Amino acid sequence: VTEDTIVKKLRRRAPLIGDDCAVIPSPHNVDLLFTTDFSIEGVHFTRKSTAEEIGYRAVARSISDIAAMGGKPLYCLVSIALAPWTRPRWIDGLYRGIHKMLRKAKASLAGGDISHADQLVCDVMVCGFVASGKALLRSGARRGDILYVSGPLGGWRHRPVVVPQLAAGRKLIGKATACMDISDGLALDLHRLCNASKVAAKLDSIPLLKSATIEQALHDGEDYELLYTAPPRVRVPGIRIGTIVKGTPGAITFRDGPVSPRGYDHMRATTTISPQ
Ligand SMILES: [Mg+2]
Image (cartoon, rainbow, N blue to C red; front, side, top):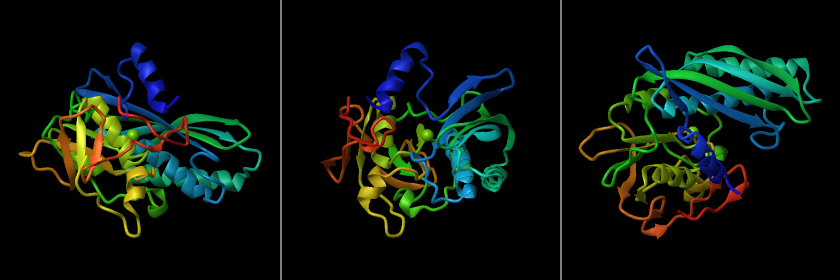
C-alpha cells in the first residue's frame, strides 16, 4: 500500500481530497485553505536536530502547502505529543522555532493540544486564504505547457533551511495552470501533478543546489520549492525544466529515458510506483 493508494480511496467519499491544501469556499470573496502536516521523531527528524530547528521545520512544511496554492497563511494550530525525554528548556526551544517560522510567514499561533507519547509528535495545521476560485491546483496542466521550478533542487541534505515560497506562489495566480510544492522529491511529486492533470511530462534539465546530484534532486524529499506549469505564451518567474506532453498519465522522462516515480512515500520509506 502507498500513500497515493490511500488518498485515492479517500477521494471516493471526499473528492476534494488530494491537493496540497483543502480549498473551502467562504462567503467573503475568498476561499479558505487548510493543511495539516505531521513531524514525527524517527520519521521526519531525529534528536540530532535542535528543538528550534524541529519547530521551525514543522511549521515550514505546512506553510509550504499554503504557498503551493498561491495563498496567504493566517493562523496555525500546533498539537504536540511530548516524549519522555523532552525537558522544559527543549519545549521552549521548539516553540521558539515555531514562532520564528510564523513571524516570517506573517501568521500566528491560535491554539493546539498537548499530550504525550513514546516519541515526539508534532502536528501543525495551518489555515490561509486565496481569492475565490484562484487557488493553484495540481489538476490544470495541459499538453504543451512549460514546466518550471521556483529554485534549484537537491533534497534535504543540501538544504539546511527550508524557505516556503509564499511570494513565488502568489505571483503565479492567474498565470500557472497547475502548481504544487516539492516535498517528496521531484520525480514522485511531478508524477502526482501529472496524474492529477492526466498528462505526461518530459524533463530536459534539472537545476541543482551546490554539491547535489541529479539522483538526489529527483528522489530526495524536502526541497519545498514550487513545481508548476504555464502555457508557453504566459511569462512566469522561475527555472524552466521541461514540457507537458502527450502520453500515459503520470509518465515522466528525463533526457528521453523513463524516470521512476520513486521518492519519499510514508507507507514505504522508499518506494516505486508504476504510472497508472
Ligand atoms: Mg505539498
